[in-house]
Image (cartoon, rainbow, N blue to C red):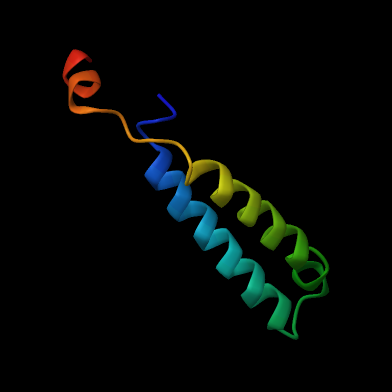
Length: 64
């Protein structure tokens, strides 16, 4: 099941990294600024994990 949604999770982790960069640069919320580096690191680790998962083959997709 994870192989089916790996490309969506890869895109979500990219979005998390971008949100972390935006949170790092914004001056209004101390909470966002405080946890921005954590958001970037979690997004980076998730991207590295999900980008290495191979999509299911056509035979595996047809078997479902």
